[in-house]
Length: 409
Image 1 (cartoon, rainbow, N blue to C red):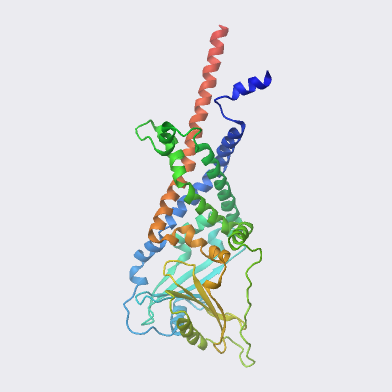
Image 2 (image 1 turned 120 degrees about the vertical axis):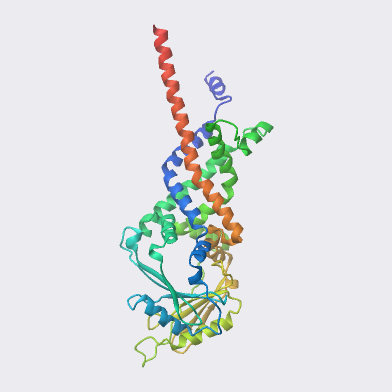
C-alpha cells in the first residue's frame, strides 16, 4: 500500500533525481551568479580589444613603409631611451607587414601584492617606426582600459594567486550549471507544444514568461559554445585540468620533453653582448620565412639564449616555431617546430585563440561575443525566475493561513 501511494504521489510530478538537479541548479546558480556575470561581461568587452586598440592608436601603430627596417638593436636603444633606463625592454614584437610599428615591451610584476594595481608595478610598450627609429608612442598598458578589463576577467582585479582560483571555481560551477540546465531544459515528451516551448521565445507573452524563455531557450542555444569558453578558461585556472586536457588530446601521460639549452660562457665576457642579436634575427627570418610576426626575447643573463619565435598568423598565437641562439656567437642551438608537437601540446597552445574566438577569425569573435552576452544574462534571468517563485510561494502561504483562519471562524 505504501509503495502504491508513493507511486501515486510521484505520478506527473518531478522524480527525486530531477528534484536534486533542480536544487543544485538553483543554489549553485545563486552562489556563482555574480562571478559568472562579472567574468562574462568583462570577456565580452575584451573580445574586440585588438580591433579597438588598432583603431584608437592607429596613427601610432601604423607607419608609412620606407625602405629597409633598421637593426633591432638600434630600435631597442631608441625604445629604451623613451621608456627609461630603469625599465628594461624584455620583449619585442616585429611584423612582416611593412606598415606596422614594432613593439618593445617592459614589464615588472609583484607576486606579493593583493590587487592588480599592486601586482603590476609597470607595463609599458614603446611603439617604434622600424624605418626611422622614431618612437611614435609609449603606451601605459597597466592603466589601459582593456588590460584592466582583462585582469577583471582573469582574476577579478586581484593578484593571480588570489583571484584566479575564485574565477576558476566559479567557472567550474558554471560548467555544472550548463549540464544541469540541459537536463532541466530537456522536454519529457517531444511534442509540437514542447518543441515550441523549448526552442522559441514567446515575445508576446508577459514579462515573467519572456524572462523564463530567455533563460531557458537562449541558455540552450549558447550551451555548446559556453561549455567551450568555460572549459578553456579552466585550462588556465587548474593545473590538474590542463594536465587532463593534455593527456586526453595526446593519449600520453608523459609530458613533452624540453631541451634546456644554454649559451657557451666566454671567459673574456663579463657582460651580455648585444651585437649578435641582429644576426640572430636575420637568421630567424631566413629560417622562418612564413612567419607573419616575430617575437624576440634577448638573453638576460650570462648563460641565457636569444629566443626568437615566428607566428604564422598576424591574428592568432598558436602555430609558432621557436629558435634559440647562443648569445655570444649567434649559433642556432635548438628549434621547436610547431608541426612536430603532439596533439596535446597543440591544443594547449590553441587555448587562448579558442577562448577569445580568434581561431575562427572575426566571425569567431562575434560568436564568442554573442554567447558571452547570453552567459552574462543567465544569472540575471535565473535570479528573476527564482525571485518570482519565492514570491509566489510566500503568497500561497499567506493565502493558506487566511483560509485556515476563515475555517476556524
